[in-house]
Image (cartoon, rainbow, N blue to C red; front, side):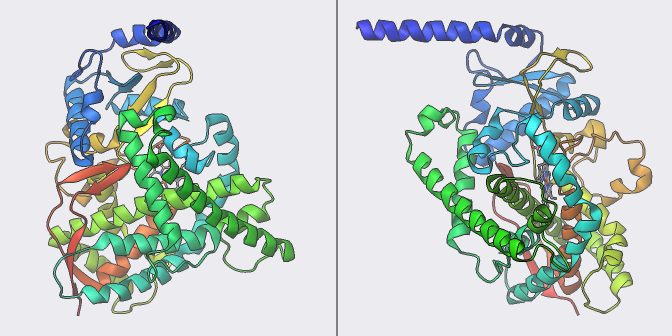
Amino acid sequence: MLVLVLLLLVSALYYLHFRRSRKLIYEFSETLPTTGDLPLLGHTHWFIGSPERILNNVRTLVENIDEMGSISKVWIGPTLYVVTLNPEDVQKILENCLEKDYSYKFLQAWLGNGLFVAPVDLWKAHRRLLLPIFHNRIIEDYIEVFAEQGQILVTRLHEQVGRKQFDIYEYITSCMLDIVFETAMGEKMDVQHNPDTPYLRARKTVMSIINMRLFKAWMQPDALFSLTTHAGIQKENIEATHKFTDEVIRKKIAAFEQSSHKEGRKDILQLLLERKLEFSNVELREHIDSITIAGNDTTALVISYALLLLGSHQDVQDKVCEEIKVIFGSSLRSPTKEDLSKMDYLERVIKETMRLYTVVPIIGRKTQKELKLSTCSIPAGVGCAVVPMVMHRSKKIWGPDANNFNPDRFLPENCATRHPCAFIPFSYGMRNCIGRHFGMLAIKSILANIVRSYKISSEICDRLKIEILLFPVTGHLIRIEKRV
Ligand code: HEM
């Protein structure tokens, strides 16, 4: 009994201390409007259920906030988030809050201080060092790899010609894995022909545990998580993925010490070694892992959604085909940098795809010092949720036909008056996507390769779910026929 009383007393004191240390945040929270909250629970109940239900809840909650037309608050457990869909406020958040919010910590056990999750001081120094390696001139050397792997993909797809619908994502993600492994660390993995390796299985397992933690509040405290079997499985699989990348780095350093200069195309790891950036082996691994993870599913999803949209909008597919025919004639040669730069209509299709299916649906940041927005000042230490997935379909920004697929929204004359933060698939500001040029070129090259070889048909996809990224519930189902 005495122990129980003591325990209750300690908990009460801890709670009081916790509340007092965050007095400013609670006072600030009182000044903000909200919708859909419950006493004590806040908005936590919106984040319970299947990945599809959570996605629909988030969408409804944020759309309600959009209708209120003001900056609002959302409490998830003990964490306060400011939510706004006003592009001007979003710009201020993305330009000024460079620290990632609490939810990214679940990725840290895996990616350490890789660029994606690094704390802001370290991120600043490392982003400066990595930026020249993502320069357009260097990325354009990888166009050959995009074309080679795209060609293998087209050959593999032949087995599906004339059959009933199939999930294209499995094909695309294997192709993108081959591309990111070869360009990031010079490894020819041939995932397209060997999709089931222990390393790839370990990656999938870690991803699914991190995703589960993100949306199951009771799994979030480390003390509780470590009591579950998932903790052991996560540790074992993270170690397996680290071992794989460590081994590639070890081999690469040994080869580099033999002959530091390599002729021809250089992968990202080679470039990092040549520039003697003095990253430790662990830092090298954290960056390479972050790049291969951030660059694979995102790009594969955009390509797969674009194929779904082209399959359900034959008029748009015909225009893409026409553009490709003007560039290539009847030749099936590899797309070059010049070819890709001429694909203006395809580029608009890709942008419109990323608007309707925003594969990174939510971006979380944290204020480090007071930040003044249009209608309030946020104190330090508050989460800020930017929700491009909802902004990209907001009728206030995109008009009454916001849900319709219309690539011409991205004609230069239609973009001229749009706010720079109305469309942010790659985020915005200094901590935006470092691989966006890489991603756009790879997407264009692969789509051009597929569309010139196959006619695609599909139904529109409206059931979506959130698993860190935005996935369709029933997969990316399409049918293909050979083009004559
Ligand atoms: C269409 C494809 C892609 C999309 C939609 C996309 C989207 C994004 C977004 C929204 C962020 C910011 C995330 C946040 O703040 O939470 C980000 C960051 C990042 N992306 Fe991408 N990305 C794509 C492709 C790539 C590729 C191909 C690479 C690498 C080859 C890459 C590497 C990274 C890295 C390293 C970061 C962290 C940057 C930093 O914090 O400085 N991404 N990406």
